[in-house]
Every structure is written in C-alpha cells, then in structure tokens.
Image (cartoon, rainbow, N blue to C red):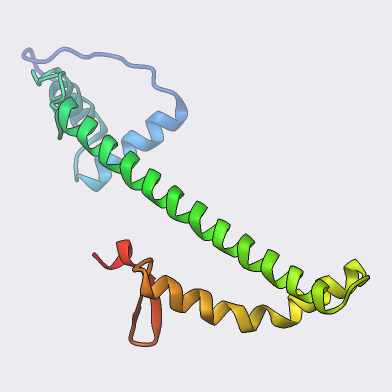
Length: 149
C-alpha cells in the first residue's frame, strides 16, 4: 500500500459528500491521489502568509477621488438643472404664444400644439447647447463634452 510505512500515520477526515467529490475532481485534475491532494492542500494551508492586505490606494487618495467625483456629479446636476429650466422656459413660451394666438383654447389643443411643434424647437436647443459648450458635435454625433475629454 503506497505511503504505508513506519514513517507515515493514517489520518481520517469526514468531508461532506460535495466536498469529497470536489476534492476528488481537483485531485484527478492535478494527477494526484485523493490522499496526496488532501496532504498537499493541508500543507499549503499551513504555510505562513500575510493576513493583512495592503490597499491599492491610500485613504487620502480615495478621499480625493471621491471629492473629484462629487464635484463632477454636482456640475452634472447643475447642467441638468439649467437644461431643464431652459426646456421649461421654452415650453412655457410656446404655450403662451399658442394661447395668445388662440384665446379660450382647450388643454387638448395646447398639448397637440406642443407635440406638433416640439421637433421645431429641439434643433434650436441642441444648437444652443453646442454653442455654449454643453454638447459637442463630432462626425454626425453629439456628445457631452465631459465624455470626450
């Protein structure tokens, strides 16, 4: 019997059926007997290794990155707020202009007018966003300036 000599000591272990099957598969994959595999893995587990893990980045560096991201988020929120305000202003102006031309009009007519004329206002909005640097036009496509940098 291999390994059976005065230099060895039999040892029993009681793994779950799943563990046993997994260990057996790994042993076969490594061209080892199950006994050799258990012995090698036990020794490997007993080797001294550093438990402490060194972080990739210091706390200060992480804080700086967080602050940069926070500033970027704040700028993006501010841009979105300005764009929403511009859009609301344009929509208000369009509604006011329509009601001025059609006093006593109903809500359905106002909604229909806004739907029909939106395509007229969008190109103007996009042009203005490009002009002020909020969007960049490149090869027939629009990008936020932050995405290109």
